[in-house]
Image (tube, rainbow, N blue to C red; front, side, top):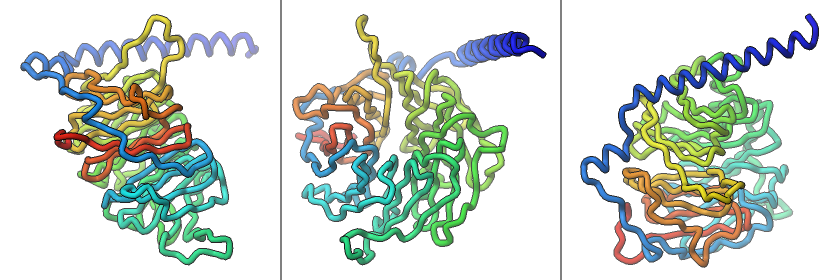
Length: 379
């Protein structure tokens, strides 16, 4: 078979796939008779009121000399760990802005970090394709650095995200550019289960993000460059429980809704979406308004839900941070319009465990802590 014939067959197959994808999309739309916002508005629900005094920047954490890529809160909400292009992990006291630990990494290309449930250890991973564990109570070496207590190796691509299984100090899940997620036993350093890879129901491109269901820690969701999110059960690694379609670009971030029955996603296609975990239906699209002259449309980099789920915080590549009203799909506020907002891409964000504060990290090398001000109750 000649090269020309191969190209012709490839073009025909691509056209067939695109046609099937469009028909599937139309079929899904016919099955959805409404969305969350339409239903809420038809029942008289009104958008939440929000102003610049309701969420105020109360702390700026300065200390990194490179872009901030990732952050995580401890369960007791008074400490934050951040990972940066400068090759360091910094543990901050969120109440005083003071650094409690500064960990120099062997590989500077770090992409993700996470606190253990106890807050006594931190994990990180990046382009070295490994996940490193540090015990914050360890004695420092002669150079003042905390030694690595465990290295989890086995991925064949960069480690894009890591998260401890809730209430399990020795279990951690990572996602990777090798198209898989892995459940690890930190005590032994061994892989317990691999999700995806050789299995046909796995992702077909780099896995960028994951979120473990706090209501049922056996379930987690992953987002990928294949424009899908997939639900996994750690007890059944051989196949994904469900695949969620709708995005038209890389799924950069995923996060479970507080009730554990839904989850949100953020994508390069500029939208956030809300999915029903059980049915697979797309419940709502949160799409920012486009300007006529806006050729470089900002992408969604990170999301988090308020403790009730009424608010969705979304960070964008242009430095905006939208506060979405999840019920009516309207923007309640944009933190990026405030005078003390970030001056670069918002790469990560996270809410404290009690929902009282939001932390954002940026390519401007800083982290900012935003607290609900005035008489505004935590939503």
